[in-house]
Amino acid sequence: MKAIGIIPARYASSRFPGKPLAVLGGKYVIQRVMEQVSTVLNDVYIATDDKRIYNTVTSLGAKAIMTNSDHQSGTDRVAEALEEIGGNFDVVVNIQGDE
Image 1 (cartoon, rainbow, N blue to C red):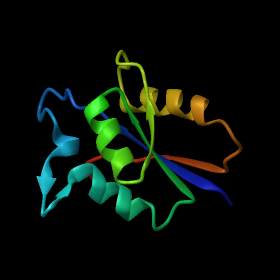
Image 2: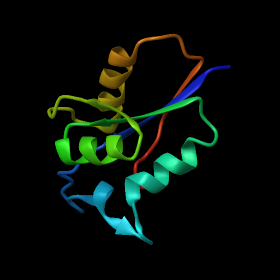
Image 3: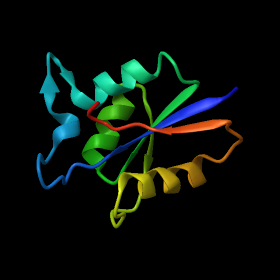
C-alpha cells in the first residue's frame, strides 16, 4: 500500500501568523510535524503559498509544492498539491501542520 501525506502550511494565519516557522524546542513547528509523519508514510509533501515556508522546508530536505493563495481551506490546498504530484496512491493523508 502506498500512502502519502500532504501538510498544508499557510503563513498568514489570522490567529497565529507565521506559526509553521515558529521555533519550538529548537525546531520549526512544521519541521517537527514533517519528521514525525515521515516515519510512517511513503512520501510527505508540504503544500504552501508562502516562499518563506517553501524555502525553509526545502532547505531541510522536504518535498514542497507552491500552491495558489486563494484557497478557502487546507483541504483545498491539499487537492491542488495532489493534482501537481500526480501518481497512484492508495491513501492520501491531510496532515495538520501544527499537530
